[in-house]
Amino acid sequence: MKKNLMNILFAFVVISLLTLAYSCSNNDNPVTSAWDNNSINGTITFVDSNGYITDTTGGYYNVDAFGTWPPNAGPSAYSLVNIKKTGNVYTASYKLSNLASGSYVITFAWNKVPYVPGNSTYLLGVYGCSTDSTRYTCWSSPNVSKAVITDSKGIGNINFSSYLDTAKKIVKF
Image (cartoon, rainbow, N blue to C red; front, top):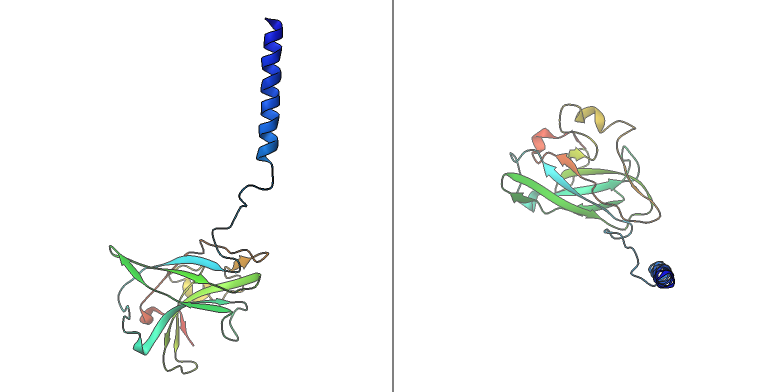
């Protein structure tokens, strides 16, 4: 009886070690990111629907990634957005691609065309800034929130709130 118990215990230990060794092998499915490399992904939730511009012949809504802040040149990446309404809530998912590793300020804006410097871009939202009265100081702060790409890995859930109505702009440039 004692010998049978020892044989069962020995078989259990051998099977456990083989299972552990197999589960640690490198040929299993590799771990992959949910997001493409060198990309920033997220959703914008709009706190209003008044002033929502549906006629895009006069301009367009877009998301920008700026490597320097405040911006002194065009964005490092941009994406036009498709605004969707679910119930009474307007949202837009976005993906900014082909970004190098680094820190980026993410913004949402309406761009009027034809473009006239100083009079065509309506900044409506900034990642990390609320849509209350502090939005006027948050966006210009040197400590504004940034999305960070490290080792070319894509990142996601860079979500923020914004206005759609250009009358509620943070600044126009």
